[in-house]
Image (cartoon, rainbow, N blue to C red; front, top):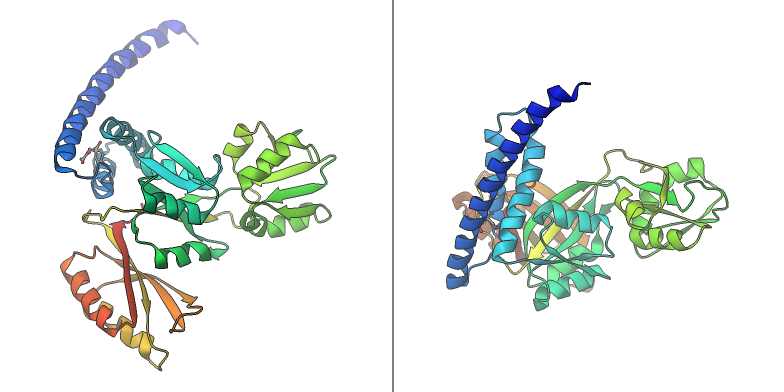
Length: 357
Ligand SMILES: O=C(O)C(=O)C[C@]1(C(=O)O)C=C[C@@H](O)C=C1
């Protein structure tokens, strides 16, 4: 390979980088001005509906050869850095650092945020309610293992609203200090991860004891301190705790994903591509659920999710967690929800937020 051929191309890249840098800083200056206007009006800095629109637009306008999703990743970080000039938002998540929850924080907010690792889902809600954090990110559902009951229960009680959702692929790896299973007597992971890798573990290591621990990152930390322990976690945890991968992608479902909700005190405006989450309940009578949901069909509002959860201690049998397409302020959604509320014994609007893409 001749360096002579590379030199002029690299000079072109240097010149383009200088232009990109100047443009990025011009953008950042305008964001700072936006920040001043917001500060004067006491308006929220993080505006998920606006960020969703920006990301949507860059993907639509993208002429290539860069991939739309890669361009979105770049612009998410650009907005994150611009936003941090206005205010660095603090986001609570289920820690410790290195978990998929932390990854979900970065996917929603970019990296120019202050992460606040919490020991439980309850604490994430508390931090956002008390204002210690501006937002919280909590796991809501896994594609293999189903809903996270504690999150659903806390959504019922909280004063916070959902202002975003993030879905991330969850790929588990088996890791140890030496990168082999020689001398390993125990495999540790969060109970969800053990369940998601159950068939693989039965096939490959049926005789090694399994232990559920508080988080996958905790399992990785234990493995880093004890050569007889192997952990199951994401690859980020292997880097963080200086472990070697024994086997990658060991989850039974190759399409395994976890959906997270972003919760906060913010009530989002409409982005044009939104989803609204509700919790409902009806008296336990024949046809009651059918009647409850009839206003959605009547006003042409699509239901995208319907989840039921026993009410426990309540006066009703079940709570229904329902997602519908559109923003609660959209005309037809507003009409459907008003009628639906009249049919419901319990009604709580959890929030409207941009649909994840
Ligand atoms: O448009 C705004 O409200 C901004 O503050 C600018 C900006 C951006 O960088 O584009 C930054 C933060 C907001 O969450 C949304 C967008």
